[in-house]
Amino acid sequence: MTESITKHPAWKAELNKTILKYHTIALWVAVVFDLLFFVTDYFNIYDYWQEFLTFRASVSLICLITVLFHKKLRINREVLGVIPVLLISVQNAYMWSVMDVQQFQQHAFAYIALFIGSGMFMFYHVYYSIFIVVVNIVANIIFLKINSSLTADEILVNGGLLTGAVAVFSILLIRMRYRLTKKEVVARHALERSKQEVEEKNNEIVDSINYAKRIQEALIPPEKKLRQILPDSFVIFKPKDIVSGDFYWATVTNTTTGTDQDSNKLLLFSVADCTGHGVPGAFMSIIGLKLFNQSVKQPEVNTPAQALDYLDREIFNTVNLHSEDDKIIRDGMDLALCAVDYSNMKLHFAGANNPVYIVRNKELHEIKGDKKAIGSYQSEHAFTDKEFQLEKGDVIYTFSDGYADQFGGPNGKKLKYAVFKQLLIDNAHLSMEEQKAILEAYFEEWKGTLEQLDDVCVIGMRI
Image 1 (cartoon, rainbow, N blue to C red):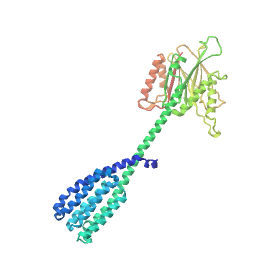
Image 2: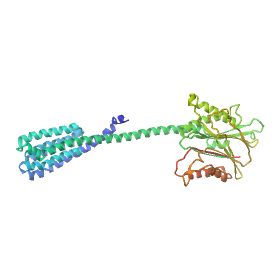
Image 3: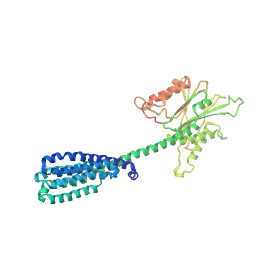
Image 4: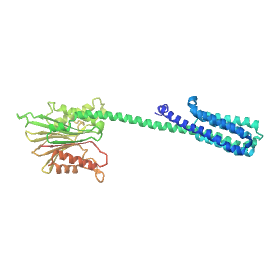
C-alpha cells in the first residue's frame, strides 16, 4: 500500500505546490527587502554605497525576473529557492570583504539571518544546500583575499566561524524540513487514498448485499401475498442488517380426505431463525426457503414433524456436501411450523427449539418445540407432532427470538419473553393491523438509541 501511494502523483502535486508557494514568497522578500536594506548601507558604510546599491539592485532585478517569468523560463521549483539565497550570499560575501572588524561583526548577523531564513522557508534537496554553502565559502575567500585587510583569526572570531556553523545547520534544517514535509504529505494522501479505497470496497459490498436483499425478498412472500394465504394476519419483519437470517414462509394445500375444498384446506406457515444474521444467515435462509417449497411436494412428508425431519436431513446434507468427516457443519435454524386444519379446527405443530403461542380469551397457551435445531441431523431423534384444538377467534403467533432478546428500556436490559407474552395477551383482541402497530412501536421505544441486536420476525394469525 505504502509503495503504491508514494508512486501516486497526488502527493507530488501538493508538495510541488508547497515548494512553489514558499519559494515565490522568498523571491518577493528578496526583491523588496534586499533593496530596503540599502538604507542601512548608506548610513553605516557610506564609502561603498554605490557598489552595495549595484549589488542589491542586481540581486533584486534577477529575483524579480525569476518570480515573474519562471514559467516561461521553465525554472525548476526547487531552483526558484536556490536563486535568492545564492545571490544574496555572494552579495554578502562582497560586502563583508570591504568592512572593518566592527562592521564585519555587525553584518555577521545579517548573514546568519539569511541562512536561518533559508532553513525556515526553503524546500530543496540537500545537494542544493551544499552547493550554496560551497559557493558562499569560495566567494568569501575570493572577495576577502582581494578586498579585506583582516586576518583569518579576526574573520573567524568576529562572525566567520559562527556564520559557517549556522550555514551547516541550515543544510540540516532544510533537509529535515523537506523530508518531514514530504513524509507528512505522503502519509496524509496515503490515509485519504486508503479511506477512499475502503469506501469504494464498502460501497461494492453494500451494493452486493442490496442485490442479495432483492433475491431474498423475491423468495420471501411480501405481506400482501401472505395475507392472501393467511387472510387475517400480520407480519413484522425487521432485519438487523440489509439482509436477514430470519425468514417466514407460508403456503396453502389440501388435506387428503373430504370433498369440500374450502373446509379441507391446510394453511402452512413458519417463522425460522437461521444461525447468525446478515449475509451468513441470509444464505441459510435461501436454502431453508427452497427446502420448505420442496417439502410440500414430497410424498413422505404429511405432517409438520415429517417436514422438519426432511429439512433437518436436507440442510445437513446441503451444507456438508463436500465437508470432511472432521469438519462437519451443524449450523442450521430454529423454527416453528404450523399447519391449520380448518376441516377439524386443529393446529398441527412441530418446532425446532421454538414454540408457538395461541391466545384465547386473555389466556396464552404455549406449545413447545423439540430441543433440537434444524441442521443438527440426529436421525435417531425425530421431530414430534403436537396438536391443539382451535376455536374461532384464537390468535396464533410464531416468532424468532429477536424481539424478546432486544436490549433497551430504562436500564438497557433484555425485553424478555414475559413482557412479549403480556403484549400479545393484552392486544390479541385488537385487529391484526393494530396489533402490528403496537408491537412495532413498543419494540422501537424499548430499543431507543441502542443497536438492534438481532433480526426480528413475528407472524400473527387469527382463526
